[in-house]
Length: 196
Image 1 (cartoon, one colour):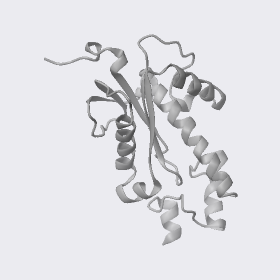
Image 2 (cartoon, rainbow, N blue to C red):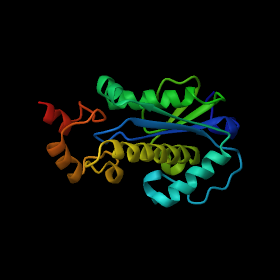
Image 3 (cartoon, rainbow, N blue to C red):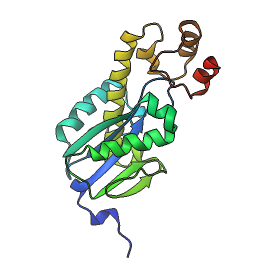
């Protein structure tokens, strides 16, 4: 007999998403969010489709109403050691393990599942279709952006506050002129090329 998500109480379903797979710098960040069965979050969708101002508002609202949530990271060292996919799955696992309540089921954005203490379903494009995944994507994005803004003060000149570590022309030029910092991922092409 197959089990559908309708068989679970929504209060025990966690949405999971990660941000920061593509950047050349900084950790990959994942969040797990359990939403209440009834909620009203205007404009809730994939974090990439929401303006920074709306993301900040939603971030506060999600944290205020969530039954439970947790944000977790996999470090630059772990990304370089494991590869970005495995590091992303590790951050997702940490986010779920960090929840106060163990979910009955997890909805994971994408097509790969981390090792979890509960049943899970991979949902391709889930950050657009599943509210709990959208919520996870937003709080993970706001958290990671804040982290990159802090790094921008530690490592001025790279423009981290603008591109958040992604390989923009400004970032690539800064790498050439200023060199590699401890927050750069050494296994990623443009950084590895400089090391070689």
